[in-house]
Length: 309
Ligand code: GLN
Image (cartoon, rainbow, N blue to C red; front, side):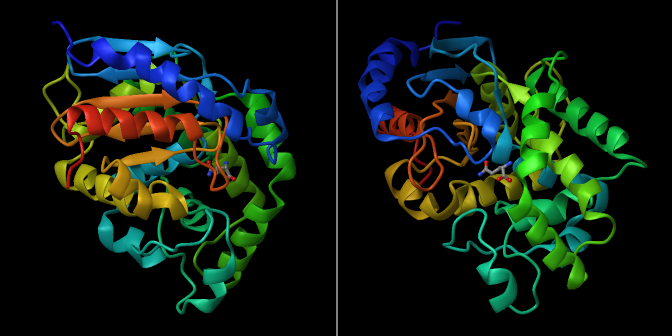
């Protein structure tokens, strides 16, 4: 099938490349600082083939916060809404993704939503499995099924680099343990969380994951749902309200596509009933979103009327 999205993509990537100079690669996880700040890549999946990709679309990068939508889906499939939302709320925070402030000021002290680090840590603590190895294996199988790529695994160097420096995430976890939001050993949770964040994909994998979410959890090559309809709907709604951290409001206005970003510079987009989009651009803005990726989505959305609003 010929894809009409292809025609302008090269030009759009060239247009956004200059924005990378205004951003900065994340370095609070030391291993991420090795990324090339001028890289930009995109892939679009329309359910037939990866119909168009441009730039550094085959470069591997780690999911980081993009993993939060996948663990949320898996935890909901494991336990259902009642259990999951007894541990984490549904409201945007307006604070940075790693903020601790609202954990104390918001009573009860459960995290406000699953897209901030505190909420994602609480969700990760719910993934079923008798050991971290088993939990990670289940998560990896889930990601492989959604992307159709059996070779996906995690980057041990990035996971270790984050584990060794994750004192803020440790603080969030200890605070939540004190208040009964999570149980168990904090470092065991951090071991799982840093490995989930270090799962490595390229733009094409992300575009396929986005497509599955866009189509109620269905994979184009399979005639069954990998994610139940209601859970896919719920995940996409969180992507709209909290997916770009404290830039989600402006992003909804400028782009209007359910999306989730990560500090490695990846963004996944899911146009309901339409395409899946995978982006990579490690130069970040001051809120931790890919500066070129955001701009590219803005151009795409305007050109092809992709906003859901
Ligand atoms: N692993 C990162 C962290 O916990 C994920 C954050 C992000 O991508 N915004 O800090």
